[in-house]
Image (cartoon, rainbow over all chains, first blue to last red; front, top):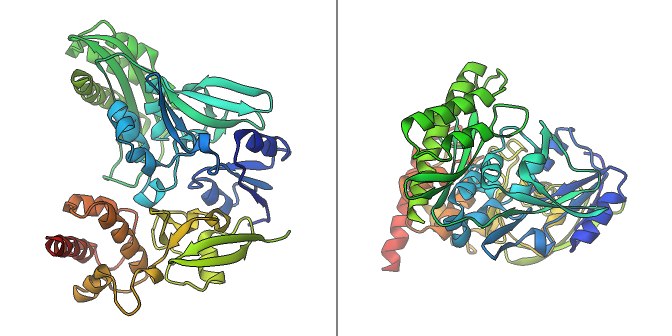
Length: 288
Length: 160
């Protein structure tokens, strides 16, 4: 590996200053489970490594007025151990916990999973379905960005030079809400999604009054599928509405053929996972 | 470029070392501190042969920079036994022959310890998921899983 400089700032301002002064050579180190592998492979040659794990705001989970704010560098293992967050957003937590092994969970973060910008990132469809908003800070200050607007393509984000994702906020939602994330992999563990589907919905009695649906690994970025949500909202989640939502998911797919799955297979599975994820989210919604 | 001075704790001992920014914790453990129990299998976090516990969290030493160890507590396989007294997992692995070539064994033992420290009463499924990040090309896993289940049962018996 080429020689670089390592810094571990204790504030976001300092981290942003370091990134801004790095002439584009700075890379944020959160869990490092992508960055270190990419450095080893020569895909990334940072001149400056900015370790953000000494920044309290980026390594804490805070609940405020029903919102949950997850620091971008909080590890999957810490998220797993947070009983309150797990009860409030089981789908999001499960999705984050599907990333890699226990070893990887000890380090990997939701912020890193988002900024690595893989179309198959497990946490991202769940975060998009949750309506999560990223707090982004850069040389020009802070802005709030819906999570679905961060990935720009495989390995690319919409972040401006010097910008850092500081935290992810899951917005408060009414009673009767539930979320779920399902992915298809050919094994039971330690694999990359062939298709991933996140669903977040709110029930009033038997009626679905709010819904968001997101798909992973079926397009260059994770997709927010508004047409699928529209098919669910106002329904009782009856078979015809579920089929309409599944059809909307299939129609949204723009996948590639690769060793993990064909275009035809991925497209069909997107609809299947939608129906199954809705069933889990609805069951959870009924309990709240 | 000047080296980074890191002050940390390894296996309970205050430890200092110098490293480059891009040296991994595994590089430092093996090449600077001469703790060669953790192995480099893949270098990409897939095989678990370099498993260590950092501040009570299981991690791959190849996926962490040496510089990140500043102020942390690192436990490696070398710190698992108490003097001459092997850890119950180590004893059981020998007793039940839960290893063959041994390259994966330090990582498996550390991961098994991390699992039992958090969950003293795991199901077989939980043990299998808990060790899913450790690849073994010899044993077929069965003896490893049974050894870990056996230690958990022994420890529950002792705790009674």
